[in-house]
Image (cartoon, rainbow, N blue to C red; front, side, top):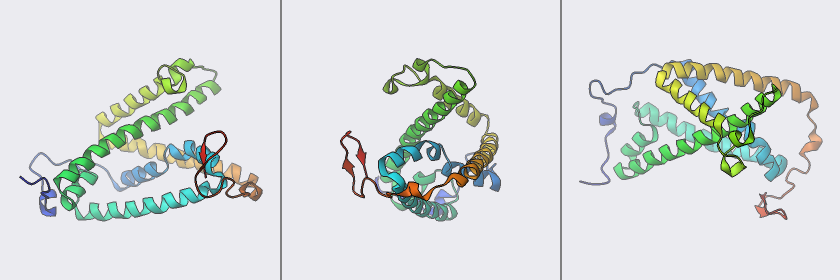
Length: 226
């Protein structure tokens, strides 16, 4: 048996009776999933972090990331059109690169999603705790952050993870519908923020554009910037 055996496209797109995933998502669901993946927690939590390390030049980082993501999106769109089957990158790798690399890609996806889930949950927890504090409800620091942040356990992050998992168990269409609603809420929130903040925009804040230079360097405080 060869570790590099590959499946043909015809074999991948053929499913045995009862083993095919039922297509339940409509075009609006798919569009909302795409927008939701793009306008995620990172746009709220990473802009400040990036600006601290690169200054206004963080705009260039977003441009580069956007170009890379566009190339990846086009590649995924073409592969999905050629092989309309479940499995994402695992399926595509199985057809193009062979079983061994597909196995590695599949497990890499699982590890990646595991880390992404935790990161998004922690970001959501920070905003949720801040919202509760604004509403006059204080969560003990030990229950609002993990050991790395001086707490014991990040309870809100765990609860939102279980809530989303329960929603996915309830059904793909139901979770996609809620996602579409949340995407609309996020877009409205961003539109309101832009509308309110745009009049206060000052081009003077863009100077110096690269306060830490272009190459990466370690500052006096031990933080890498540039």
